[in-house]
Image 1: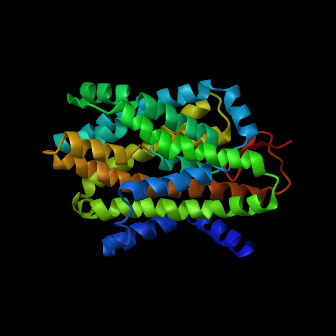
Image 2: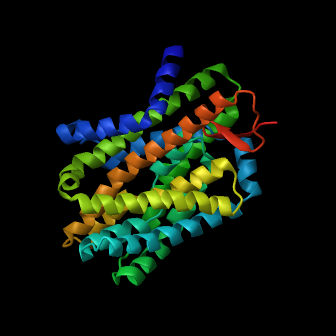
Length: 338
């Protein structure tokens, strides 16, 4: 188990490299991750969320219950910044109507499931992340079509009940199971061993998800052109920055600021891709933009999570005797240092 712990720690430390490697391997040999579709993809996502849930205990829910307003604020910030930023970036880069539609679709979708593991690896507030993802997904059937129609004059019907069932299956259920196991067995040595290995398992599962997307849309990513990649990168990176400082504006703790940065910046581009192919089948450019965003968000979010984790280690190395008084996290679990 000690060997597996070390492997898990190294995978968490180099998450971005693992994700990039998975994408690179898929571009060379698409069949490597072509199996990550349909039910297999749901199972892999469930494994990731189970790992997230295993970090949540009673104290986390107490902290979350103390400031439920943060989730509401976070969702408002997300659904304000990203849609407006999307149409602004599209106009800045003078994107075609099809690419503009794709970018706005990404900007008006809820937070991605992958944002939860990124918050986890960034030592953010996992409970807050799951709460934001859940709320933004539940209200997406109403908010996404309204924004889409207002910004680009397009309308799209969304299966709200279907989205809720998917969210329940992929996010809420495995998180609840993992959290319950943590509450029941957190004092058991064997459970602590398993929990210590789960970050590495989550990273490998996340890499498989990215590989699955790259297997389907890899060719479109390479053919999309530099302007699309630049537009998506600007939209994503500015989203991270504005999300972080919006959290600071509302007096959120460091873990929450990191989480809201990731939740705002990382959109459910996979959902945007699906909506584009289903409701705009004649507009290939919109699907390409959404698919490129799916890959980009996965890689950039992993890099940002590693930067946050690296910064913590750097600060600890510089000030090993300094004890922080603000809320921090260990392996994604909020704690209070005294």
